[in-house]
Length: 134
Image (cartoon, rainbow, N blue to C red; front, side):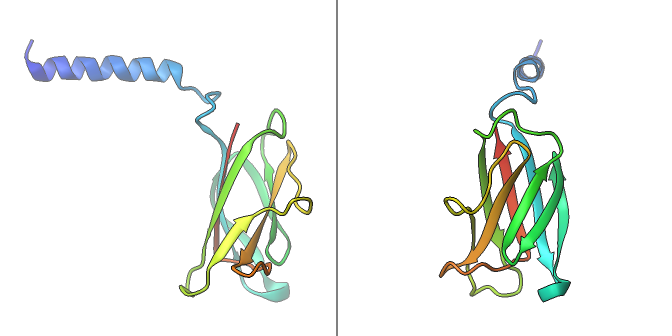
């Protein structure tokens, strides 16, 4: 057996081993994620979901406030979530994703996130990316 064959065999054995150890229940695998943003302004503003996993819906509750509802609930509310924003079209305006201490809820069924300007004003944005781990 030559070196290339040994490397191929080793790679196949490693892949098989990893496949049996890293499953959907592994804590390092995202339990939900979504890429969404707002199109339009004012009363005509609406959320567009571009892609996602284990997300039933994204609702804009008001300017800069969003509720992400999971398709399959989390086992408890002790999950970790992270979000970031992008602002297409206006490269000088920084926007941030987050949650305020008591205003946004985090339950087994959904998480609420906000988008703000650098000075803390709630604002919509063209893209928010949210990932959940548990």
